[in-house]
Length: 202
Image 1 (cartoon, rainbow, N blue to C red):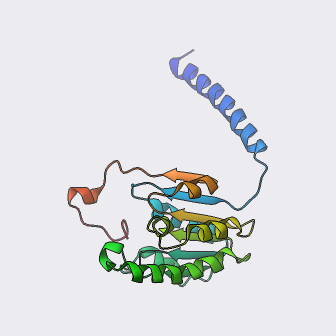
Image 2: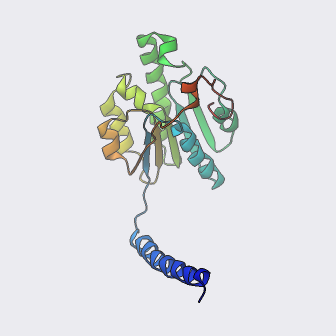
């Protein structure tokens, strides 16, 4: 028996064992519910991942809502793509980053106004997916009442999925979430003096 033949047979046996384990886990997963996904950490890709899920949801014909906190001063590709889509309701806080506004009271007012759109989406049983982009900052900075936000998330329709992005997600959000991914900053072009790039960074 050649080395290649023997290796192929070992591979097949290993994959058969793996398939049996995967099939067993799939069979045991019998719960259907709206998921809460938190994408946090210092690395690039949190919003990119979230909008990838939004694209996937739209592809399946799901009705979606997007609320972007902090962002809004730049022309973002995700907004250009989804803002006029019939399956997507899109809201942007439109203040830009906090170091640009330098006005905490104005930011709080804008955050509260923007939250009204988020809370309405989270109460609507006809909305399948709600993306709350950069929501974590609103809680970290104290712009929104954490108890109100958490209560609204907890009481949303049973089948509604929620995706939350932003650095430093607080413990309560992480505890409530079904899935949490922390994206680490191993290396970033901006730290090497490279400007943000259209289509990649915004």
